[in-house]
Image 1 (cartoon, rainbow, N blue to C red):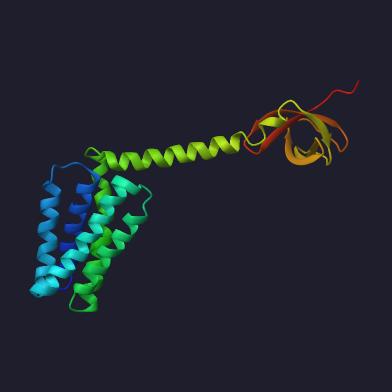
Image 2 (cartoon, helix red, strand yellow):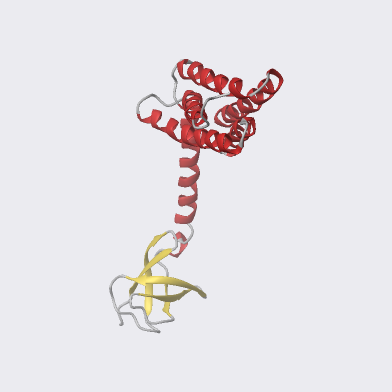
Length: 209
């Protein structure tokens, strides 16, 4: 039992910061050893042998879920569940709600503080893979949207509202929102789609002959 409840905050903070930090950056196990030491001290300070083993297992199950997420799943779901598992383990191990609150705050702050290691040390490849997947998904989504109205490029139609500069045009019997290229276009004017960017359609007024 610790003399003061707030000591639990610092122990769980340091333990979680180093353990999660080891997952984020490659420190060759140094952070893992430090984190394991702090977390062991925390659980040993509050629990008897049997519960000590159980809660240590629950806490490190959260770490394992984070590892699985980083290496296999890469969507953050298991990592979130793992973080919640770690919070539950330290919270329920405390002898009173004050110590439990301090412990949970320590885990949350420790996990957040571990992100600072990314600014100093080399990031592990498994998290780079997740970031790359997110980037590719984002780019694919952007490209898909960007190509949505490309078929309208160069087509002619008619303004169905006044455009000052935003309004609506009708092309191939379909109505679309569009923006003029700075011209004042009135209802009924003939227009041509000159540029398409995603769902934004730029039109110009056709000269009257």
